[in-house]
Image (cartoon, protein in one colour):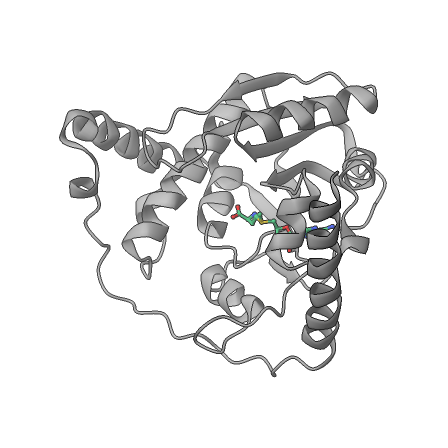
Length: 275
Ligand SMILES: C[S@@+](CC[C@H](N)C(=O)[O-])C[C@H]1O[C@@H](n2cnc3c(N)ncnc32)[C@H](O)[C@@H]1O
């Protein structure tokens, strides 16, 4: 690390320590975010013409398999498209890992942020490989739950609105902690792999420890449990694979996710691990 980068990181850390301390200790009281309950936004026209039919077929397949049409409305167009993409990511990760979920599944999601994708997560766990709804216990652990959004609601307020009364789902306002053999599945969408991204997101340096977070995650899986990690970009994916290698763990699957239903500036890469 050169001198300029070191100074930049130290400045970010200083600012983040102060901001984070204030957020954690003097955050506004919880206030419900109002969700519009209109009909579902039309999304197919958002896809380029050359993939629209394929995107429509894939959405229809996911809706049928995961009963996603019956999910309450209240999505923005972007949220709905991203929910389909997260559903597609989990569907493919489960299938590539030969996942067999128990009749009642216990799941942790690490770093849910505002949990705009919780409906997809819930549907994926409820219906993967079954037509009868299974019971889902889903906990989201968010280390920075009180970040204030432009509408003066906290991240947690938004997460609670996105959960929209799902039974068995909890949003916890602290970081993930090891809980030996507690979970059938743990998901981690875009964990910070590089310190720069962690600092630029607004977190203090002291909270950056991707290796120990990974070890805590692995220890918290039940025997036979499944870990699903999604990274953005090839560099993050390769670094994540290095962390796993250092931990002595071989992935069950590692691949680039096709961006048919949503595309981002950086491709999404998926790693699964079976304990
Ligand atoms: C890049 S964001 C990803 C947000 C979300 N999962 C998504 O798919 O868009 C990473 C999130 O992880 C949270 N985070 C970082 N370290 C954490 C930890 N040890 N435990 C729980 N959450 C953590 C951050 O506050 C942030 O909300």
